[in-house]
Amino acid sequence: SGSPAAKPPTAATSCPSTTPSYPVPTVSSDPRFIAARHILSNLSTHLPGAPPPADRCEDAVSLFSVLLQECMTKHCGSDDAAESPLSARIHVAQSQYEYGHAILRRVDLAREADDGSGGGPESADADQALAVEQMKQAASIYESYLDSSDAPSAKFHPYAEHARCQLPRCLVGIGDA
Image (tube, rainbow, N blue to C red; front, side, top):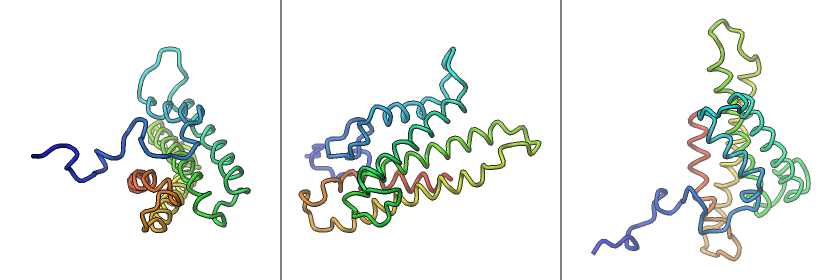
């Protein structure tokens, strides 16, 4: 009979929105990472006495920027992750995507605030390009990691399930841009 265990895994059943049951890069449990994601998920919520959404979004962008730099330094040894092994870059991808996503949210808020007079932020296009580039780099890392993990070996590819769940988020984020 059709028990839940007999169903093939899907993104909805195997990529949890809360605490996953598979290994994730350590940055995901950093309090600043959690706080920045919370900020972004609550931008449309009116919070009495809280700063306006644009200011809160800027806080999230700043947090993710710092985390991205820290991840690159800690795991890749420099600001250029491209030359690092995948086992190091997988830790950077999570921050890279979230940084790009936060920038994209900032661009959206700036465009919503533009009254149509053309006086909106001049850097919106450059910010959008930066956001897309960050998300594309994260997607590329996840895709490369998955390609390298074709042999089922959790010992050598402990973040394969994480990458499998995050790649669609990256691609949707890129498409939304």
